[in-house]
Length: 185
Image 1 (tube, rainbow, N blue to C red):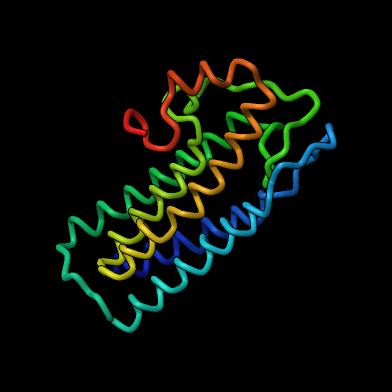
Image 2: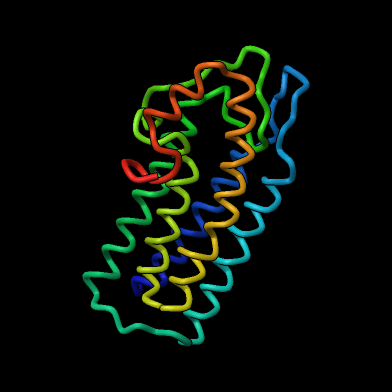
């Protein structure tokens, strides 16, 4: 099995797990601030990796990366997915597929939320960065690192609005903890 084939298998496994566990919010408050951001993010997170896989399969854009770098890509991919799932696990009952503040919702400041306000999106994006490196394809890397960003950033903006309006202490939290890239932004 090649590193690229392993990366594709990991992406397919990740996608299957995501589809099984992502569910509409059990929104007990009646609020829903999603603004179609889930549809945009899901489309980006499925269409762009599929395009990247297609480019890898036909060999268009092969970078000829050494095996060690491509294996590092797999490790980065797994670290990204683990970060995403750590965020979901930390939120537990407050995690949902759509942006909705639940009636008993509280601001979570532990686990990966100590280092980044949106570890799920950072982890998903980091997984895609690793996926692109593992495929060793320049066009795939561009699609997975740069072209996925707008959907992640849109989703973050939607969540930020909902969290700021729901939690008075969110502004203070956002001054201390970076939004998407730990220690950077």
